Image 1 (spheres, rainbow over the protein chains, first blue to last red):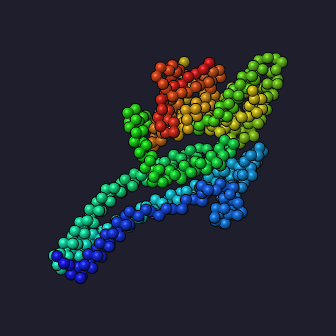
Image 2 (cartoon, one colour):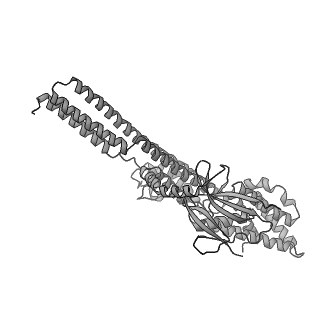
Image 3 (cartoon, each protein chain N blue to C red):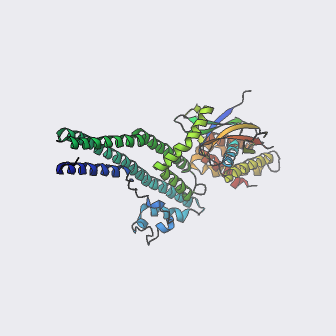
Length: 349
Length: 98
């Protein structure tokens, strides 16, 4: 059957709209710009150089570069003020970059939600429009064509909803949130450490993981990988433990060596306290250890007036108790400080 | 006399079995206690945690001398346990050298 001029126009308009929707539904979401700090072509030194190798001349004058220069200038120095300065600058860099990553994540997720909602709205309007057009159009053939187009539109929409279900999108976003929270817990747990144990580059690598944890592809990979893991967990039925359980950080080989050396020093001092000729020197060493520990604001109150004691064995026992208590409170940083001071003052073996 | 137990946790994102070994050894010394068990648990909220139970000691002898390996058939460890390594549950064998 040959269509009239108006019918042909209607069919063309409907076909055009249908193709537009298909194009809109399959078009990739425009990529958000990754934070400049993670430009894979340049390191921090290049990004913060005066020439502005990042391609943005203003970046060299950013707060990021101010913090990085402070960190870079102090990170290898050994005096307390420089060490504290480097640590502060590293922590500020972490907070600064975290803010950028969070904004990137929010923009990305919001844009995905917006695109999906927009597409659903367009489909709603078209469905209603096509249904109305059937009612007001003259001519059986024209109605038949619009009806077929409407059927195709509804079929396409069903497939779209099936493949990109809102619930599935929600699950992926929840997975992204979980992954991001896990990486951020790791970063925050390391922020109390000195830069010798947790450098800015360590932190930046973790922040990069934090960035990728907030991407859809990473969440999909993670969900796929955990399918097997969850099945195994279901078999072993994992116990749920109290939320108050103290979580301690991973130790490095240097941390273990320090702890072992500290115990060795304490053993040596204990042996010397037992001999008349070496008792005074051992007590003197213990007092020096206590004085050094008292310089740390976190330890000062715990040491108290222990340095006035003349009972060397009691001092050693108290030091061990304080270290134990700090560990149980999750203050591994202070327990490590005790080991460090015992070794540095008492003499490493 | 009843033994005093200390229960602590390690992140499920522990980087390696060697990292777990270092962490257990350091905490044996800092807690002045011997590692008794390792298990995989979920913290309230769903966070994966390796739970470590230590027994308090009077002296310092023998602390921090653990070796931890992936469990293999026929090994003869001090005890066997489970730990999360890079968030994956792994069967581990804990050896104590004198």
